[in-house]
Image (cartoon, rainbow, N blue to C red; front, top):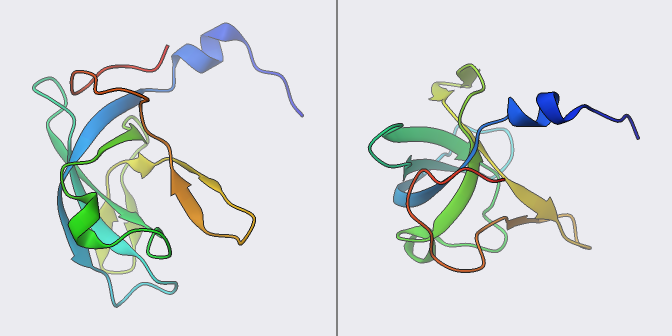
Length: 112
């Protein structure tokens, strides 16, 4: 595993947002959703594509706090422009389990 400096880690903006909207993404190569998350007043609402359909329905995602990387450049995913990276862990079956705060925290809070 490559080691990074504390300064490298500080450059990654891992922030808490709340899922505001979720839509199907049938054009994606692998099953995915289009997600809009509100990261608070400073950052605002950003959109992303996430391959999280195995464990989550759109209805259970709305209102859920998530952790996202908000300072990557936008990335084109098919016909959709992704503006942040939804974070999670791969379970034993290969599906993504979302990373989230243990307790509710203010929107836009930075992982420290």
